[in-house]
Image (tube, rainbow, N blue to C red; front, side, top):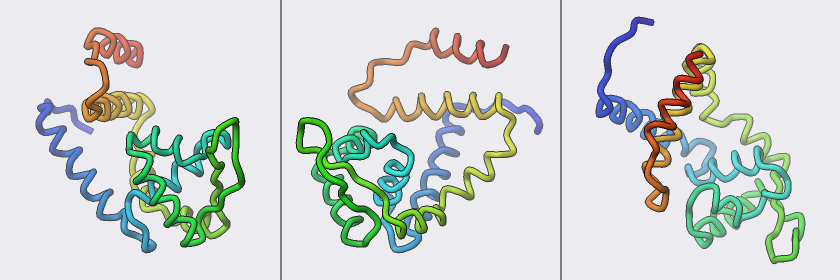
Length: 158
């Protein structure tokens, strides 16, 4: 690939295009994007973090909205409650066999496959940029330390 200078605004525009396409693909298998995000999280999270409250924390969403998503996924037969964990009222969630079969057709797989062609160094740089972009959308996040970002990118280059 040839190297070219690209502005931050152009990168933001590309990111927006990708986000819109991912969002529109998120309606596959009669699921909403938030439901896809929930089953992806519950598939990847360690068992002790497979709760609605941990899902809400991960997504940065209100627990009420996430609880509705979880109830819907349970009613669709994609999730089950395994019982209370810890000392609180948090209930551990688990994907059902149907949930795992649906996840096998995850629309994000096409993007993951496309990103496979990137060299590891480029993936790490992309991951850093995406983490910065995610952080920029979090109103409670402390300001970014540009020196630390530069140090991280320099370490990746070596």
